[in-house]
Image (cartoon, rainbow, N blue to C red):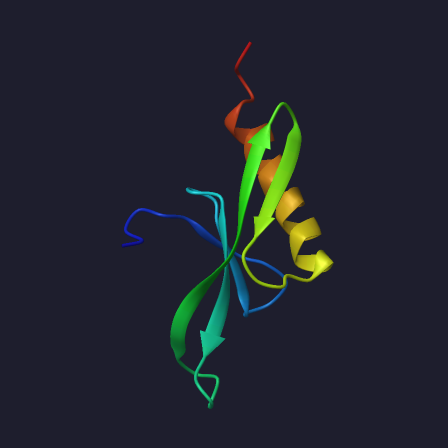
Length: 84
């Protein structure tokens, strides 16, 4: 399902961002916090004309969204360095 996707941790171990699809997930851990039980879709991000819009599917802390904005902006800056 996620083969070839690039995941980036966001503010610790309980949130990840799929930079390939611009999807954010809450990581649900087992009780012993050693095993990932599931990835719960938390939000989608859309970047258009240097503006990032989020569609939240569950409650997401503002800190997570701010860090995700930084991740997207860095990704776009690196991806479009030589585009004129």
